[in-house]
Amino acid sequence: MRLIMSVIGAFLLLLSTHSFALSEIPDALLRVAVQQRQDGKLDRAYHLLELACYQGSCILTSVSLNQCRDAGLGKEGFPPIFQRTSTREGNLRVQFDGNAFIVEETGMDIGGSYVNNFRFGVGPLKQGDIAGELANFSGAFVKQSIVLKRVITVEYVPLPRGWQVVKLDCGVLLPGLERR
Image (cartoon, rainbow, N blue to C red; front, side):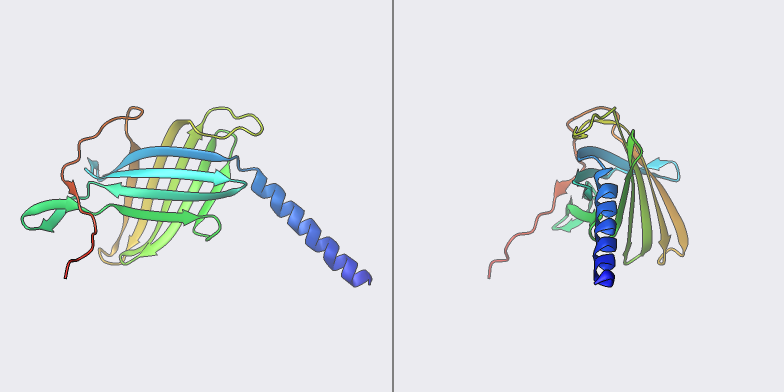
């Protein structure tokens, strides 16, 4: 009986410690549009990042736009590219230092493994506040490219003003249903 009570007690202690650690990350919905700078050159593509945290779990979603290429029939276009990582899936780590959400996203694609690091800065938060206004942002991407056989580093540069209308260089390539 003592063994059972000890195991239950240890489980409850572990559970309460885990819940406490998760609640240290405030609820948040933060958005920023960025461009990538590599070797001093700013890429023409845009990446919309959204960090959403609720009850200690976070999801980072990115949508890539304006990555123009030949879409066929003599036209340029880009397919929007969506990516999502989460703390629950284990490919996203988020910490909150009182002023910023420190985010590390890891993954692997056909070209190799990568790590994205972001700092979503926010203003002062009171207990129970939802972080929704971004005060500052910085980010970087490091990838061990199997294809290029070198390490690639990229800086994420946020758009310089709040919400703005941006003219894209080409049209959006969207999927439909093939007619037969």
